[in-house]
Image 1: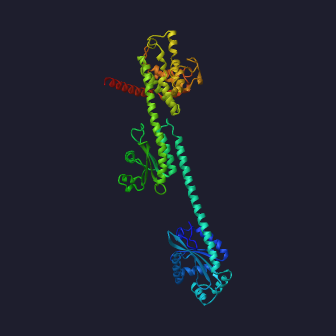
Image 2 (image 1 turned 180 degrees about the horizontal axis):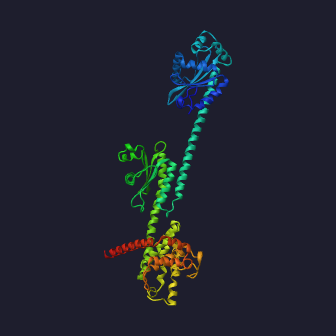
Length: 563
């Protein structure tokens, strides 16, 4: 922002109304000690700013004269208009004894007003003309004369010099004010950028491939809700992206589940086609999403995209202040890009996890196939172990590892002769020693698989007893790994409730009584208490569900073989 120079220069500024009031006040304060009054006039001659702290001579005489004197204001309009011809500074007198120096204030090459500096000239006298003006303004002429005597006198040369000084100071002030505004703007942008970067960093920090997608996107949406200041924040994924991931909206925007699915389907279809952000600030007027006008007025949706594939979308609704703009779109796009990386990695992890679990199930099926009487035993032990681990509120990741250990706990039986595994009578001492080696054989089989080395303690120690009389290491109490203690309990319970070559299955209630009897000797008493709290009916239900799943899987395998 700058002002018109006194000689032949072009100003570049806002109109007088846009000149910061604090700038004018500051300049007026600097002119005041010299007995001068700063004013800003519009093109029509009306006063836009007058120094309210100037001497009474200016407040009661000069400014009212400019404001209400029709002939003087018309003359002022003419003079302001002439300033646009490049004449530079205009100097003239109004009434005897008042001298003015003015230079134009121009916006977009048009005169937008005049900066005026007023002073008392040496020609001021309490004559007939001044007395007549005093009468029109309701002033006491003698009082006005006393006020004028306290002011210094200016001529054309001295007021021109002051006008040049004013112009220089105004340029500096406006430049400083512009710099301050720019600094404030940059500070605001920096603060916003810091918040945005913090948000993206926070979201990136939660990008663990084994984290549940629902948990990741819930936290991301809640973080964006706070930073962007929106009423609703949602996520929708393509149907084939991740299992069991329904579209969801967080915040105060409330939609029925059917409406959420309808919105998700429309946004995914639109974003898949356009591959760029969708920004609507007037939903009721939009052709395809006008039905959303009942619930929200604005929406901003961006694709979760990797390469050319749209995996899903993030969408925000109803900004609390103002409308969605390109900055909001840019921020949400950045978050979507980070989230899409997580989503792609999570999909890859899910594929690898499914492959690994498929291989583990195949391996356990091969173990169970060696003994027809224990078919499904490994799967049931894994299921019971997971249920007990969840009952004692272990972390979800640890629960999943315990489930895997339960699946593989008997993998070492691959190294046990079938005549020992399938023997109907009591095992001899030598045969029992062969059987007791299966935990160690299983541990050796698994030790070279780095990804599952953390489940080896469960496989190796699932036959340890709490009183120290188990095998292979004779560990006791808390020295037995928790995974081993959990699988030991689940293994024994399933053994008691399953048909074996040497006896029929015990009723669930009898098996639970036996579990209680062996608490503190064979089993960890705290785990036993948690296991028994579930009750016979719940275990019966769990085992029935597992039996149904196993039967369905067997039927599917038979169908595939037949095909």
